[in-house]
Image 1: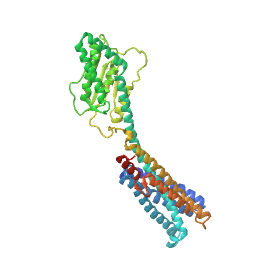
Image 2: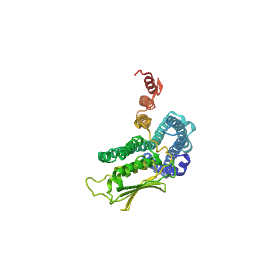
Image 3: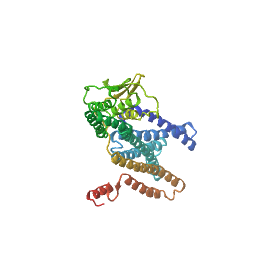
Image 4: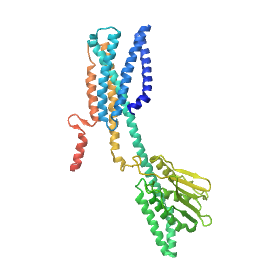
Length: 449
């Protein structure tokens, strides 16, 4: 979301949240401090509003501004450092402004009171607590952007899965033993009766299988190629069924750049033959034509008697799913009990959504997911550190101020957080950034592994 859109849409929601925080903490600290007078409660609510709006809303606006400047996923390092620097500076200045209003202007203390030892701890406590809240919202923003990216990658995985499933169904139906058995029976008969026709049949059968093998790794193909294949496939079927099968194909296409999902026509033509009676007395008529941006495949309906298993329509569903994943256009199916029509959207040039990444599991996606998981764990560790350290400081100064033991968890836990962050960002304190990956690449290049 851009900062301009934030002002239009999200600012109102953030203001409402700040008002709720003001009321909640105002009531809480009014009860804790027993400020039951109108003046006392008003002061508590005013301080609560200062913290909520100056620190809460201010950091929210900074967060949106930085999101507009640097992308969380593509520019993670720049976004993290910009967030750290901007948040620390703004929160530190904001806390001093609030404390100046609170202790000097409202409570009428000298300006020097802000720099006495006790107040320095108050400043530190407020700054660290505010940074913890700000870090939470920065981490939340990162997770939202990461999920958006992961959803896009998931969609791409779905395209791969649907494509491979459709390819499998196509190959399965094309190499179906029943189909192959019938084709070989026809070929056997033709060899004895009409050797010339048998030769033509063999040629067309080989073209069908060769086309299947050639197109199985493509996502979209020109409509002209698919129509040429459909013609060959229908001629093959017509040699098998003779006058029991009639078909009509367009002689030309309106635009040579139009594309469709490969082998979709084969599935639809095979389904037409599979689910209808094909006989000389009741010939099956199949028409393929272009209309209103769709390629329509229409066949007459003369259903076979329900014998054996009912059709699962897996092939047809996979065609519809593949179109649904790569285009806003939908596959339309119409059955008026006389004709069965499937309308396939005709697509123009492919876009990024349609592009399928070869060897998806071997791409940078897996590495990115692993890195994001490490970063997420680091942010959780950092947020926990930032939230609990102020609590330790408060407990220490409240119950045992003579011994400042809170330095031990600050330093010890802080070192752990530091090394966790270095690991998350693949940075070695002594060997530099991406040392491990560079060393692996070096060994692989030199064949020393």
